Image (tube, rainbow, N blue to C red; front, side, top):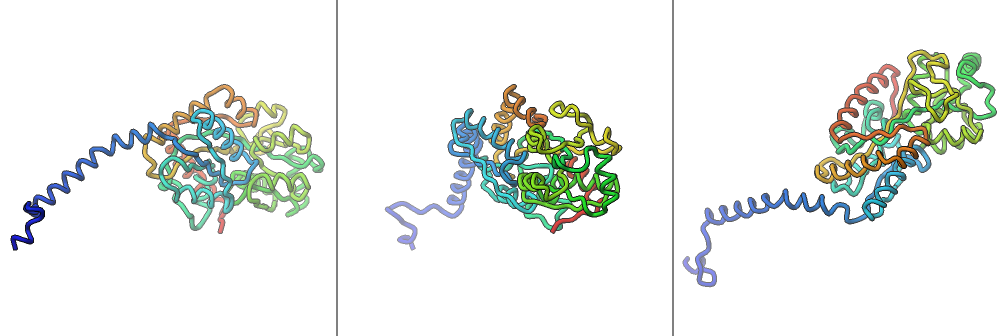
Length: 341
């Protein structure tokens, strides 16, 4: 028995002493965690960052992601890659980020659709918009513009409504997908004007714009950044903007209220999220850098030129905003009896 208790001539510790030793070791590791976390935040980023855009290239979400990604690359001297993962109204790419490692190296440029509308619109969701993400900051607020092809037979909202009522079911409106503000803008217009229109969803704003150019659809309630260049080029006519006030880039275009649809107002918004459980110091470092970028005159001018309004807030402020928007759009989806598979 003594032989079993001996090893190299020394007694093996009793179970009590062994457990005490393991506990002390655990306390030592625990004591190092705050320091290790701080070091990882100080060293972040040490490798390329990916911003997932859950919509097609060329749309507003993509434009904002590439602008911020470029400035982060210049600031941190690491590559920031934009990865377009579209489908299911933005759910596919957004879900990918929810499942990614919570280390700050995979982010999503989400929207009002992915984080405030889809949870009410889809019967089943591949992610929890509130629990599976760490909000970083809002990036922009964007009004939509009701645009039609330059050759369309209507030149005002009143003429469009008159045409729609005289030709039930002939008007079609494209959108960047189920649950997008492009669709919601059209659905609200249908409700408030009682015009029979058919919704045509696309996998992103860009293909919807292409079909409007080809006269395959009647109109789009498009985000200003993607609609504006085509209006300026004379390819589209802007009949109204969905914001409460006119936008400087289209000063001669009326608001929807001015165009004859009382109480109509819709604003899109965009923001950045990391996966849930991303260390707070890394989220805060991302927030500080992106907010500083959004507040530079150069970036503000570029965003404003696109017809958007730069918007920056703290993670806590962004979280509160998201929760309020989720509640608001839940009521709209239910009232309109909308659903997506």
